[in-house]
Image 1 (cartoon, rainbow, N blue to C red):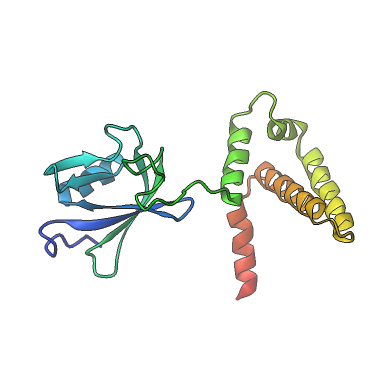
Image 2 (cartoon, rainbow, N blue to C red; image 1 turned 45 degrees about the vertical axis):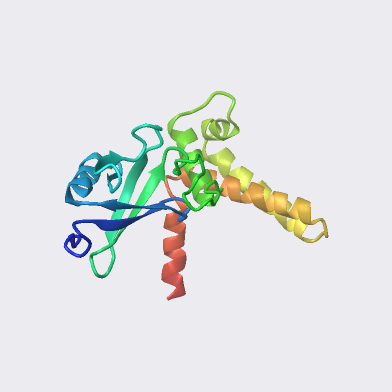
Length: 195
């Protein structure tokens, strides 16, 4: 669906959202030329209402917004642009223009780090060493961590229990990567069972 640039003097508001954290980072405006440049370069360019010109976010700071997806709203007069920010978004140096912290940690982020270690082995990395040991050793580690979690679940030490749960999840993600699978693949199986 093509955005309707006729409703707001040739501009459409663009909500910028972090593709990973889902946090809203800022609001900007685009004209047709800014949208075309954003789509072709895969980097967010706005129309600056104060400068009266195209403005690529990050052109002076180096904190660009790499485009992951562009989604028009139901009326085609607003865009949701999902991005991968390369640094703080606000001109004040804050993560967002709303003063929120955008640095979160998730299983998705951990999975990306594990995938990166698989594709680009790093000297001294525990994850890299697991991949070098092979699938049998990785599977064995998952089994060991599962047993340790079961043992800790019978005690009352919450810290040890959570530590073992984290170890199991981490090694499970390594096993998925070793099998060229992702959490999304597992989620799809769970989704199909849920119906």
